[in-house]
Structure formats: C-alpha cells, structure tokens
Image 1 (cartoon, helix red, strand yellow):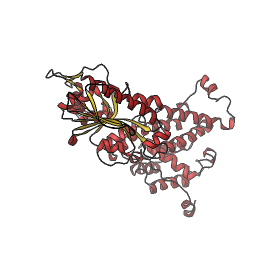
Image 2 (tube, rainbow, N blue to C red):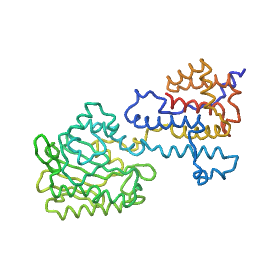
Image 3 (cartoon, helix red, strand yellow):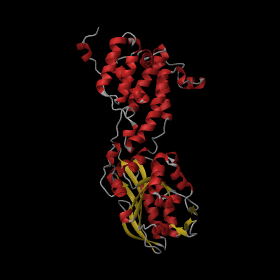
Image 4 (spheres, rainbow, N blue to C red):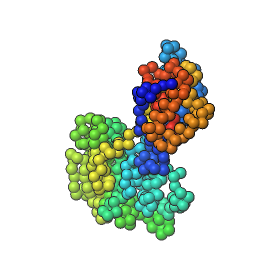
Amino acid sequence: MISKRKIKKRKITKRNLLCVKSKEKLDLGQILLYEPYKNILVNFKELCIDVNAKEFDPVAKVYDGLLSVPSEIREYYEALLGVTSFYQHSVGGRGKYIEKKIASSFETCSLDIELSKFPFWLEHPSIHKKKGIFTQQGLSPDEKKILRTIEWDWLGDRDVSTDIGSIIKNEKTIVLMELKNRVDTGGTAGRREIWTSEKFGIFIEYLRSNKKLFKNRKSGQEFSLAELLESFGIEILEIYVGVLFDKGNNPATVQSDKTNGFYSSSKQGFEYLKNLVNQSSTMQIINEDTENLQMEFKLTYSNLKVKIGALYGNDITLKLFRKNFPVSDLLLLRYDDIWLSQLITIDERAMLLKHQKNFTTIFLDLLNRDGDLRKKYDALINSECEENKLKKIVNYLLNKYALIFEDKILPAGKNKAGYLADVIQVLCAAEA
C-alpha cells in the first residue's frame, strides 16, 4: 500500500486545454480554435492506439531514412515523422484564424469581402459575417435562401476581394483591409501586388471609369461602385493594407516595416496608385502623406471620398472599429492542446510501435474493466479536467495498477504520475 505521504509527492501539472471545455460555454473567438483543435486531437488518439493509423510506403521509407535509422531510435523516429507529417497537413483553421478572430471581436466586422458581393454585404451584414466565419454550412435554411436569391447581378469583368471589412454606419463609412500578419509576410512581390493591378488597382480603375458593376433585378437599375455605395448611404470608402506585427510579435510600425519588412515594396505600390489617380480626369488627391503611405481623393462625378493607404499595429483595429483595441490581444488565446498532444502522441506512438502498448492503450483497456475508474473519468470530463479530480484519478490508477504501467513504456526522463496525468488530459480533450 502506498502511503499518503508518497501520494502527496506525486507531481502533476494541470494543463490549460481548450478542448476539455464545454463548447456551449465558449465565446466565438474560442470556438474558432475549438473545432480544428478537436479534429487534430481525435486523430492523434488514433495514432496512439492503432499501429496501422500511419504507414509509410517503400519509397517514403527510403527517402525519409526509416530503413537506415539506428535501431535504438527507429520507433521514435517513425513516430516523430508520422505525427508531425499528419499535423503539418492538418491546416484547417489556421489560414484565416487571425481574420476570423478580428471579425468575431466586433459586431460590424466581416471577412472575405468580394466586390461582386458588396450589395449582399451591405443589405445583410450579419449573414455575410456568419458565412465568413462558419462557411455556408453554418447558415440556417432561411439564411441560405436569402443568399441564393439575392436580387443583384454582377456586371464587372474583374472581381477583387479583401480579407476583412467593417461598416461604420454612424460615420457613413466602409473600411476594407488586406492583412499581413508580420512585416516580413508575403515577400516583396506579395506586398507590391496588393497595391497594383491584383487588388487595390482594380478599385482605382473602377472608380476612375465609373463603370456599371451591379444590376438590381427588381428595379432593373444599374450602378457603378460609387453609385452603389451612395445608394446605401455610404459617403467614405477606406481601403488599407494592414501589417499586424513586427518580427518580435509586437505591434508593427512604419519603422519596423522599413527595418525588417517590405516597406519599400509598399512605397512603390503606393506611388503606382498615386500616379493612376493623378493621371485621371475623374479623381483628385486632396490629402497625402507619402512617408506613411496615405492619401485621400475625391471624385468629380460623385460626393464619395476615398482614403487609401497602409496601417500598422494598433492603428488597424482603430480604423476598423473606431475604438482602441490592442492587436496583441488577438494573441491572448493561448492553450496547451496542440503542443502537449503532439509531444504526448509522439512518445505514445513510439511505445506502441516498440512494445505494442503504451499508457493510452492500458488506460483505455482499464476503462473497459473497471466501473469505478469509468465514474472517475466521467466526473473528470464533466469537471473540464478540474485539478483535484485529475489528481484523484492518477492516484487511483497508480495505487491500484502501478505494476501495469510499466517503466519500460514510460518515456525516458518522465515522471510516471506527471506523464500519466498528461496522457489522461489529452484523452479528455479528444473525448470530451
């Protein structure tokens, strides 16, 4: 029998896991991570318990060195390759996370703003926002019907989209933003393309020509971009490239873009746009700040004013939402699900490949055999992995089944109680 004194010395760490939480209690920002995290964890569980969950073909075995790796680390190396290759291919949720986080933080904001869908966005901003965050599958049947039966036709020959946009009703303004995560994201060509004919240049061309782009099927009336915006009461159109962070994960600045980013490429693109405006008879610059890449111009045929430029760090959220919101707060959702589950799965799969068992398979087998353990595990999941319940289940297992959790399947340098606690928490996150 193990003494209470020894039990107290068992060190376990309560992890901050998102996927053990009740989904119904999560806010929108957390839900953006919850689904992709959960999918990864469920698949990691399979890698922990099924030897055949990841196989390498003969060519891969040669190319990846599986046939030449030293025997003493072969299983670990194979597990490392299998787990990390799966994770690197599980890209769902990563690509648009920061845009979705921004859009979810403020009611007026939406993402994936296509020019051809401007009428739908302006008429149904809440549905547009919901579709952008959750895809069309997240819409109700009534909302899908509204989307299918929109009364507007697109007449343009070149569509263009921006990452995120906000409707500022009280200022009669819409703000469009193309985002870059860091000053060094995208390279020189990627930064320059935003300003030129791939993105912003398309808006400039349509504004210059006043070409009809939209047709209302109900009235039969056709609208140019400026006419459409004015018909919805919009008097100011703002278009920006926004750079969120410097290379040290601090809010970006013009100076950090000059030092470590692609400011010069933005400057070239800005000058290109400024020349287009200056050469046009329908547009006239009324304000400009060449150093900070900002200009404002008016149209000869419309009361619409247009602002276009670059924004950095906290100025991005200030422009989008007209309130102070530190961009660093976008990175505050820090959870242990991914790093912990990936490391645990590598160790557990290595043991599975070497010994045909590991702490995960033993624990799951004991759940089938021990009703008291099932009750404790259910209570642990219901408590969202509350620390005291986690300690109780670890102590129960090591008091009753210590010999089954053999030292040979404990990764080198690991404390048995702490490692078992991590295995159980990862399982909880996958199964909750």
